[in-house]
Length: 353
Ligand code: KG4
Ligand code: ZN
Image (cartoon, rainbow, N blue to C red; front, top):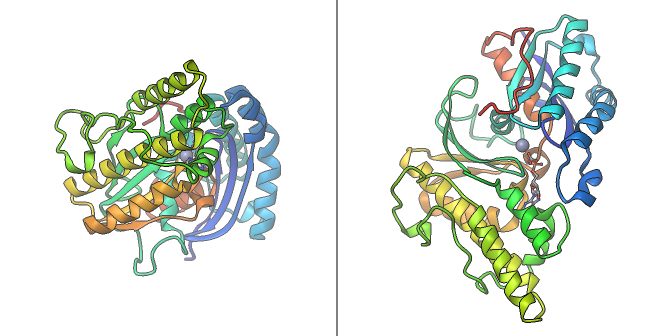
């Protein structure tokens, strides 16, 4: 029996992603993004995202089938992100996937978006060569515009445990808000990353949330939020700094603020992620989500993982951001592991953990 041919659909935010895999081999990976349509609003507008998915879904499926050189009737299963994400956006993908699966009489799998970000690590070319498979007990650090989490993955098809998460904004959201505060544009991640290259990361001492104001790397923080993050205080601190310059009629040192903000985010994310791995005995960590593109986060995480003896896997950026390949990859794994398809009534589940 050959590995299952699976088409995956992702529509939880502003990317319409369609991927096709055969087992762990990536055959096609097509993404249509509505990010341009959200620029003038400075954030993703759910209604616009949903409409954009509706327009992009069928053409993106077509492109993926062409790129993979397979036909719909060849598919062994279809997988679709069922949540978490924006309700209207998710519904477009789920409805489309149900229509396809019904017409083709193909098994359909509703997929958790966060687990799918981890699933990308199973793909040939992403998975380290020494591994036949993802190791059991893998740490996964997911950082994007919609989520900031550290997970423990036992078996990818069945055991995923949330170790910590943001209690307010996602890291990418904090980037977007801070970019707006300093008038740097949208999406905030790439523009701040660029601006930060010209600034001094030590110019401002911005707070690291939920760490009692100290460097978390060196402090043993007890309490219920030991492995959680908070970015709202950081955002407020940046806002105060900007106001102080403006109130005195001084030019806002945008590059220094960007660099210091970026340093605070990278510091607290990497310190807490590494600590969570250490305390849970996890020796492998996989990074995912759009903020994985961040230069400082990548650099600092690599350093701290090396010091802690943790093996780090960072997928290519176009597989870290939202895409359909990760959904297809996880779907193929569920098929291979003999997991039953989702029942016909499953819906979009925006709030699923
Ligand atoms: O995973 P993703 O494509 O979509 C979500 O699920 O949110 O991530 C998008 C997020 C945006 O907030 C964007 O600002 C951020 O990833 N991002 C970055 C960088 N590139 C994209 N954040 C920091 N540094 C970057 N270089
Ligand atoms: Zn995502």
